Image (cartoon, rainbow over all chains, first blue to last red):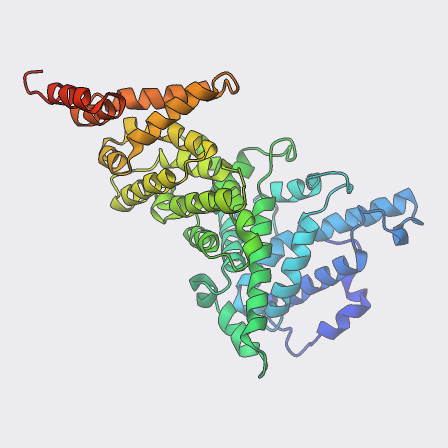
Length: 264
Length: 163
């Protein structure tokens, strides 16, 4: 768990509502909002931001460790919480804030000169299927299925899966009177862009992902076995919500099905 | 799962977009199309939807005759004709033989400048030789190579039952 008590973060008070935070799912929804908020507060410790220049090497190391710890919890919690109806009233905010921040985190690189994300992303994704979550009985395959569903919804936010799981309905109901379809379209474009970006981030080469091994390949193969993800990706390729997503959607194909080439 | 990927139309969609971007935006990236094309060779073609999608792919690629698309398709076709005998009529309908002949001619003209073209030219020749095992396709090849009267004569001979 993160070293710092997250309850002490002041900006989280806006989300606190004891009357609503009763179920475990709701409590975890609140937890993840805390994590998101902490990440927003910390920023990217791998960048040489002016506000971190005064820190000692040890303090910087602590900050980076904390940052990685937060990521390690975020990647496990986000798709699971995002998918269940039970974490309401936090889910909508999780979806909107979480996915944006999550992609930013996964895009981290050790310096601006490096073309590809550094090993932090590979490290945490590399352990995605093996990291135990205290108190939760989930195995790797079901976690991967959650990820596949999450990606499906992000990439095709108005698709069948998104509707079946209540995402589109929830958003529709939440829209205030006067909010036009243009706003919804922008939200969908943003969702598809982030989903395709996440998929392209999974396309790691061995040189950028030294941890690529059987488990990683198994994870990617499990993702590629998702019919919902296939449907969403095929739809995004044929009908991209924004023109500049054309190339990104094709990159998703490479990420998702590259491992098939080695399957006998 | 590979069969599902192909049968859901992903291959055709990716090929169409790859061609579109190469024509409209000048993009020359065929890696994703190449990946799916290669995977399609592993698909179970007993599924009618897979056959339909592969046939569609043949027709789509016939429309994109840039050098990169040629190379992509020539490599795939070489394998596909051996693996999927049912695709031969589609190849004929898509008028592939003239395109393959054009590929050979292109290789001859650019051989000195681009040695790598030799490989794809040889592949095209290999495909044509393979098609020539069937008299009907052999006729098509001969009719394209020879003057009309000679081609007709050879076709008659090739289709002769006493041959």
